[in-house]
Length: 596
Image (cartoon, rainbow, N blue to C red; front, side):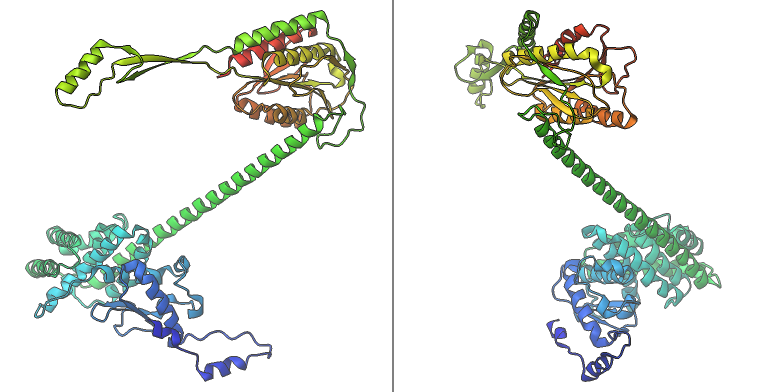
């Protein structure tokens, strides 16, 4: 095959191409000459190795073939010849079979090539000298569907191409038959129904041919012929004796039944029409399959793009949440925009004060309650072993001795011990978001007290516990920050803001306290009347859903009957604002108790 790579263009070709330089005419198109097809044939030969498993074959591709067929395999020459006209309207410079996937642009030509590859791989039996030519022809007729069935076993993905090749190879034989009468009908049955039985064509597609052949041949003869080609499908590739025996059985069956069967005058037209219907159905099925595959591919691509966009959006939100948390929980205690810039707004913090005795007592009680809720009993695990330490179980010991005395491998484990392990105490994460718009003035004092009580109790309970409180309207202000140290003073604040940015506050609390991360008792408390615009509500509900899906409890505290309920939160109405610290403390205790 390497010799074909040394063919050069002729001087006349170079002169013709040179005439087009700089004259304003369209660029010259490469000629479809026999020499131009040598490269295509060489590349087909490279692909034939994978299709047939053979490396000793040559593929020649040229306009027209010596055999007159679209393609042919010559076992004695080790050659597959291929008609270049199968690639029409493509020109040789547009065809690159060496590239896997290029065959999708010329499925008909590739289907014929796969069929010849099936012959090259499986038609390896040779006819003995002196064999009856009619019997050999019958065996070769049975060989058509046998090799495709054998090829389909090792390369099932080639089925669409073999279906296409049937339309290219079978139809010319039907329209211009070499056999006549009953033998013609029998050959059509072998070519069409034989491919049905090996899985190339579907039963529904071939029903027209099956009905016509049964009408022409009769049910008995068709059943006999079906039995013969089905047996041939099971024949080994090298078994010439068996294949010729099937060919002889084919001829005998026709010789016995044919004289008694009437032959319709227009049999060729009837068979051509029936086969045409089969091929039209197959083409429609293949087109529908391609359309479904394209739709599935497009749907998968769309889903992949949507998933990629979703991942990108989530990553962007995480980066934005990190930036928001970094700006809100700054050391300067300033009010900021969600993007981290300082807000042109009066800070809602009005100052700090010493905690009252009641607040200190409440913090101590909450700390004890949190420790009690976080306590986990030691786990016990019973294990057995064949050797000490452990308590001896006499029944198992006797069973072990009996196993040993019987000559079997002892499997009984007579010693039992109990291992006790301490369960880790889960830390607490509590985020408080308090609305400081003008309608929430009544909540300022009790929430300030609750924030200090919860932060103090959490710090006294577990060094890994964290709490944080953010006041939000249009802007964000940190009242307490997620640190190890317990706050010494209560931060007081007012409520004179406009608009609401609960979504930004939730992003900052989520990132700063890791409320979406399992392994801790997690609680988010939102103190608000939720009188928001639709856009503000939608953004807040999205964050709440993400937190609840991650296992964080979300509690909404309201103080007036006019308050709205944020979807996804547990609503708790407090007629008395002073009961807010107790409600938040109870929710925090429940959150850590539920932690697993």
